[in-house]
Image (tube, rainbow, N blue to C red; front, top):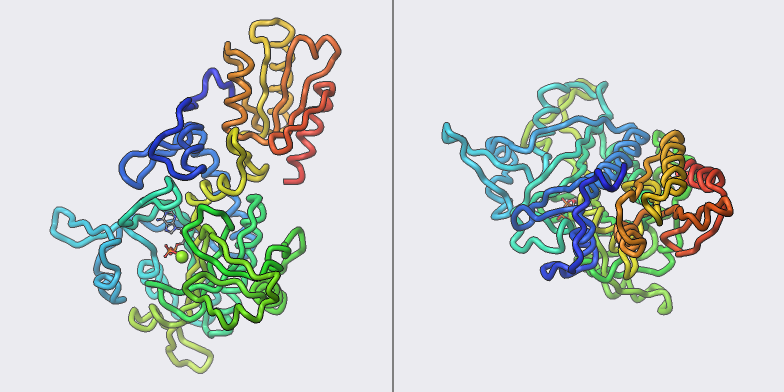
Length: 445
Ligand SMILES: Nc1ncnc2c1ncn2[C@@H]1O[C@H](COP(=O)(O)OP(=O)(O)O)[C@@H](O)[C@H]1O
Ligand SMILES: [Mg+2]
C-alpha cells in the first residue's frame, strides 16, 4: 500500500473523550470512529488488525479440531424463553419487535441458538464429540460503554460450544480450549493468564478467565508471581491427547491466580509473601463447563451406548476479538504510539522516502516495495510529499514493528536504514540485506 492512496485519517490532537491509551491511539491512528455510544466503525487500519486477530483465532481453532460456522446476529426470543434466559438476561439484552409483532433480540451470546441447531440434527453418541464455533458481532446494552473497543455495546467475539457424551469428555474439551487459547494469545504477542473466575449469567461450575495484566484493566486480580514465568512456547500439542491437555491445564492453573469474584484471603495467604501480587487485568477470553444446563431444558439429547436418551454435556468458550485490539495496544506502546507485535501488525514494514521526488530515492523505494511484496509481505510506503519529521511521527504512531528509511545520502553509500520500532535501534545495510532480514523475521511468525 502507498500511503498517498490509502485512507489513514490520523488525528494531530489527543481526543478529549478517550481515557485510556489504547482508545487514544486507536482514534489518533485513524483505526476506528465512534458511530454512537459503544458502537464503532472500523476504518481500514483498524479493520486490518481486527482481521489479523480473527485469522489467528481461526487457525488455532482449526488446530484444536473445532469447526467454524456462522450464526446470525438477530435471534428469535422463543429459544431464549425455552432456556429461561429471556427474562433473566435483563437490560443488557437489546430487544426488537419485527413488523409481525414477533419478539426478536440482537444476540449477546449464542448458547440457545447452537443448542437448537444441535438438537435438530444430532441424535447419537456416535456423532460426538463435537465443537462448533463462530466469530460474530454481539450486542450487549452496557450501562456504561467505555474505553473504546474495550467495553463496547457492539463487539466482535469468537464463541465456541462443545457437545460431549460425558462430563469427562466435556472436561477434555475445556482443557483443549484452554490450551488453544494460550497459543492464540501468545501468537498475538500477549501473555494472558488463566484465572479462576465466577460464571455469571452463563452459569456453571468450572470457568477460567484469561487476563492480560494492565493498569487500565477493569478486573481486580490476585496471583502468585510465578504464573507469569510460564509459557506454552513452541511445544507440540496433540489436542486429542487427553492426558497432555490435562497436564498443560494443570501447569497453567495450579498456582494461585484469581479474579476478585473468587479471591480468598486464606488461600492467598499460602502463597509465599514475596510472590503475592494484586493488580489489574483485561479479560480477553473465558471458558466454561456447564454440563446439562442448556441441554436439559432444551432437550438436546443423544442416544448413548445403552440405547438411553441422555442430555449432552456442554461448555462455551469466548474470545473478545475486538477487545483484543485495545488490549494489545495497552500491553505494547510507548509515548510515541503503538508498537504492534509481528503477529498482528497491519503492515509488515514501513518504507519512508526522505526525499520524495528525488529520482534515485524514488527508484530505490519502488524497488524495495516491489521486492517486499514479491516476498509475500505487505509494506506501507510513505510516498507523500511531506517533511521527514511528519513521516516519522505517523509511522511511530501507527506502530509498524519495522521501518526502512531511504534517503539520497545513504544511497550514495549503497545503504538504507532498518529500524526496530520496539527498541528504536537502527542499522545501515544494503537494501537487499534489509529485505532478507525482514523476510527472515516474518518467516518465524
Ligand atoms: N462489552 C464488551 N466489549 C468488548 N468485548 C467484550 C465485551 N463483553 C465481553 N467481551 C469479550 O468477550 C469475551 C467473552 O465474553 P463473556 O465472558 O461472555 O463476557 P463477560 O465476561 O462480560 O460476561 C470476554 O472475555 C471479553 O473479552
Ligand atoms: Mg467473561
